Length: 482
Image (cartoon, rainbow, N blue to C red; front, side, top):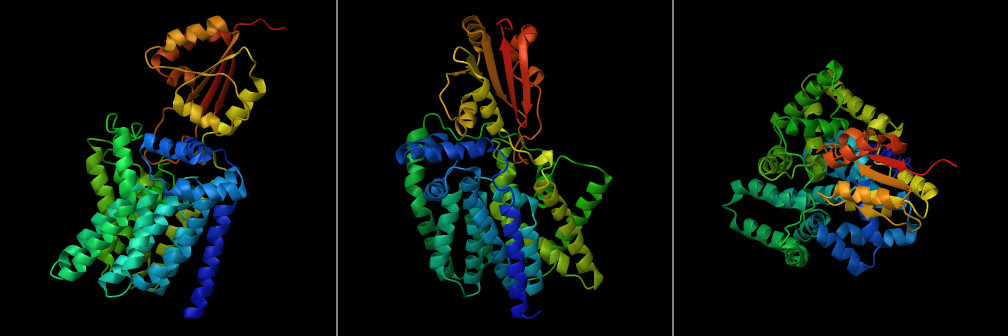
């Protein structure tokens, strides 16, 4: 394939990536993490930064970049998701450029196409969060690093791309360890090592004041905003790798197991085939996963989306594994399986498969605002529920947040002073792999024990039981029907 033909193919792949990422971009409701994005972005700048610091789990770059975007395009779901979609689209041609240089033109084209139809990448390209930014800048930084090892590239670009990656998400800092391990065989090249060390110090410098503010703000509470993360087990790593391909770690049958096994064989082929950048790709993929997994056995930190910066390495290894066969038909067969699995996930996403539904804060808020009366008592599970509703609230109405250990007393007090009591509850089904909690759940059996007991004692007063993806809205009436 000539260079000119490759350019047209890359353009077609980029248009495919764009059409998938922009399709129905604003259709689904914002889920909790996106609601947090909306709430802190709408605040005045100082209050916005204070809110991000208090949570402590995120760097500020994405929120600052989003402010002028929403000022220009408005406050819709589409506007808030447009920035991640934009960087998600840009990643496709960058995958080709890097892949062609590292693996050859054919593998580069396949890598770009795999990224374009990757359901995991599509999900986060349509999510008002920073993960596609982290992935794009991590890919650009690793490309500059690898080029510097070969005598090309520019230190200035490595510094800029690394800085933007670190400012997008703290997890991008794993790149430092990946690059350090890749440099170890070259320790005798002292000048190269010194320059790399200086470049990384400069890249981290813009993040230093923010980290100092975070320590000063949270040194007593040590708040990280990650207390919800489940502890990993022995299936965590393979589930992450399968999630990167399919976007679905819950559906398992004989056919899915067979497809997962084939994809695993293609990955293994890419891991062991000999090419110049193979070792760097292996460290880039597995060092962040393995390190985080070990740390998470003590303090859970492992969430698939935190490894968006390693997704390009995974796709490059798959592309290498699919194209590096001696047999003529094996590259086509391996590519067909990979593209088939990913395309099936994409079809499910764009067709509105309930498995990929986000928490429906939009419908919950609209329903409450349409039905709530002045003298009603609205009781919320926690302050996360306040944030979720605030993203869509159009008017003020009084609410009360439950406090642990006082749930029954607060609910009894609400029932004593109000003819109708609303209870809004968010599902406690947390996952390290899923984007959000899509299934409706039963608050009567899945709420905390004091709330379950209280609801059971007043089951006769339940007049409304609205079950939405990830949310439950219950209303208990003590007034007589008119």
